[in-house]
Figure 1 (tube, rainbow, N blue to C red):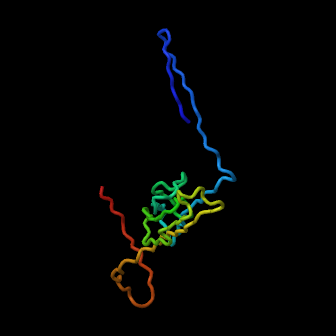
Figure 2: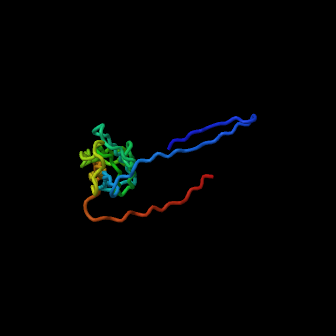
Figure 3: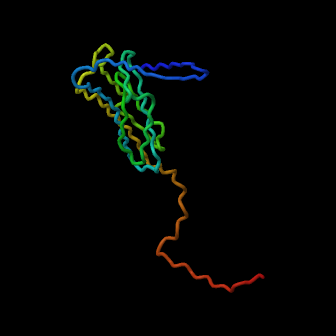
Length: 185
């Protein structure tokens, strides 16, 4: 749309008008193309007794090429996923022709953390700017990443010295102590 403003001065009064001109290109024939949507699916697994902390996992995607189509749903920067103490599964959208890495920044105090399936590499080679329209019925790719936190029970400390040995034989009841109360005051 092109907008123009015009002004006219008549008898000391300024009049301002605006008008718009719409310029349109013909629409392509046939159904609208479906753009594929890549997804990074992160599953959080918790092993052992979690003391109750939550977990933060960061998904960062970087473009592999300069000649890709930029889509509005594409992951524009690092995205932080927060998981509850019991874990779960969450997803983020990933750009076309990108590499996404998954990193845990908040371990919840786990003794070990294992990440499998990262990095995710999405190669949508058939979607370059020179292509007149993206392919139809392409569902994109899904990369599954598992982040496992293991909580080990604390190791037992060193054993202390043995206590005194009791007398051998039968167990005898303790004798009652009887005394007169003394008041000092």
